Amino acid sequence: SQQGEEDPQALSIQEGENATMNCSYKTSINNLQWYRQNSGRGLVHLILIRSNEREKHSGRLRVTLDTSKKSSSLLITASRAADTASYFCATDSGSSNTGKLIFGQGTTLQVKP
Amino acid sequence: EPEVTQTPSHQVTQMGQEVILRCVPISNHLYFYWYRQILGQKVEFLVSFYNNEISEKSEIFDDQFSVERPDGSNFTLKIRSTKLEDSAMYFCATAMELGGSPLHFGNGTRLTVT
Image (cartoon, rainbow over all chains, first blue to last red; front, top):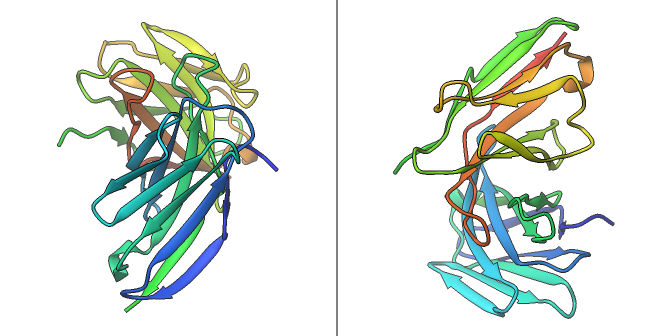
């Protein structure tokens, strides 16, 4: 598999439920970021977690990072219909020193009202 | 909040034609990027640009592609002779600094090559 692979590819839940998305990567990283994309729009940065951090919170978002397993998870609590979007993890390996991000395939989240 | 602005939002062109996609970065950002997303696929890195020169480019970014910042504000991506497989959403992104600064994306240009 390639750097930054998310699972599941698609997730459908009811409003109020929690949504968990996972991301795996292959190389060592400086940081891992999660982005959100509404249909046909640009990507919006949600949260960044550095390689020396294990967990980070931002509002209803919780991100974990396990560098030993090369994996991360994004938890959205108390989901809302407006959370319907695609979610991508992206890794900055730091090897190129250009800030280049490698994106995963994404998880499409549908939150039903 | 400052935004990255891309124009046009949609460009239709015939195979073999040249296209120029434009981006206005956030004013105090120093690092610029182009990404593309073929319909239904992942977002792919094309090129990074800093201090008026390319700092890194991917295998996709072949001789048909070029970038420049001609007037110190607009950041452009030119495709010299478009191919059908160039049809995609092209996103400009900018960052203030390296090493942990998030990318700010524009809303993209949908390029359709017929």
